[in-house]
Length: 313
Image 1 (spheres, rainbow, N blue to C red):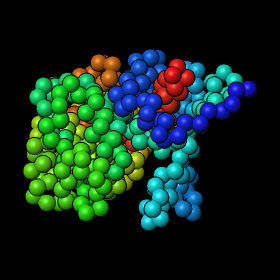
Image 2: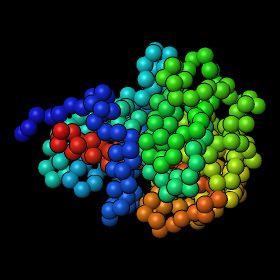
Image 3: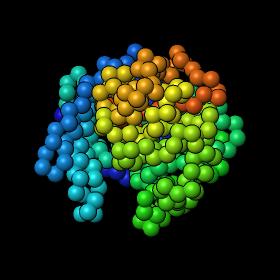
């Protein structure tokens, strides 16, 4: 039995680029694998918050993410999410690798958003304006991933936050910072080609009539059926892409509440697999929304590419 390898956060980011993570997801979707067959995750409440168990199997790998979400950790100066990812050989179930789960999640989540909307990104032939609600690791991760995958430059990047004075320098190096709920933010929404929402908000972050036709919107901040970052009216004439139908109708408040409000027909939802493989395509002037809540297979697809690339180096 070979020794179990450990890949820390530094190794994760040094080994696999955001664009390679996007490609790994796209490759998984191009196979016979269907996210609808993914193993459902389990979320259990504990005193500090909750524990999440996320198993998956694709090809020669079985993987499990064990994540703890502690609501009090930010006040302690600690990350809100603590996680480890365990990789097993699918034939023997021998543990081969332990990966820093928080780093893997930071890499995976924006890669999922970008992979999901990638066919729509080809509509941009001029430098684009990107607007991000939230300035945490997922906010900056989305900017970095978009920048690597787009064929055009980023003309402008804007982050919207509740407390600008608390924003770190690495965020400011990527773009300007605006305080939420100001006229400046409304103007930024009107101008944005790409909008990312990566917050813990439970109510819509902006008005639907501010979003220009043909924008690409990625919402990844919540998997709570009672919370939403996007206004229901935004869904009325948009193409809505989701990871998996049963998952989104169980977990994604943005979609669940838009359907309840009569702004969205569940039968019109397009799966990520359908969209990325070209089975369904939007008009170039149609707004595209991706709502992601995170699925177990996504971690495994990225982790498998990470482990295999590391083994070749």
